[in-house]
Image (cartoon, rainbow, N blue to C red):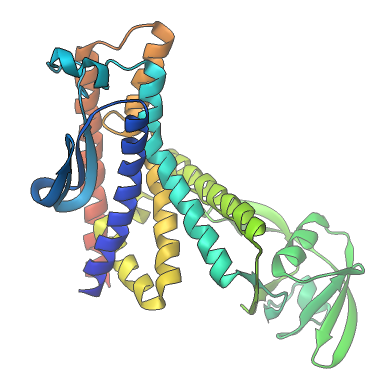
Length: 354
């Protein structure tokens, strides 16, 4: 029950911000909105304000904003032409459609900002957790629990700083200052070039000394403007990683078995809800970025597919024919249906295997 409730919260926030983007920009450009719905299917409850029906619908797996004249071939009353989506300039239509994914990115930035303001940032200490045998670290006498205080006279405060210097050394000798309890030890170590696995399981060569982190963290408070800057950086990094993952999936480097659907999201939401509001908020930000990237893919029926047609119209000076759009949307719907079957299959397979 906890997972179901957390899932509804997570999906509700994601969908609300996405559709809010479409809605606000549509209204900004004078487009009439008939429905603003959280969920699909039959209306459960809601309120009509002006011509817009704000509703919650029965199937909580998405949402939509229905605009006046949204379909190019729809019959429109002459008095509705000024507020018709189809009759707006193509650049305005591009802005309305793009606003959904953009608002998902904005949501991620806002969440990260509040996390940084409330909790600060967690930084990994340069504390050694293990030393592999027959490596530069073991030959240099490094031990579990050692803290790397400096390299070549430069003070080291984080594991990331230490890792970057070792990687950039290209095998040249490094003078490490080690704190071992109350003792201060100086050692000289030259990193080895070894083949390791990256995040996607690909082989890559890098310089290492053969140690792993102890996992010790410290918290650093962040100021208002620093939190803003780091929120954008974090959102960019997750966006970049999401795009790379999609590319690797297409290339066959990342297995489709890693994909998950609503069941996996519900499980993750339940787990993160138990950890606290901050953990659940981080999950929402992560999924919001993923939703933005997936929606911008040039697949008909997704926002990216609509944007593709609008950009073609911008170049050609006239809309894509209705027939082409219909065929493309049918193909896009088929692709999404196959993807949904795949992620549900993966979700069920994980449950059966656990």
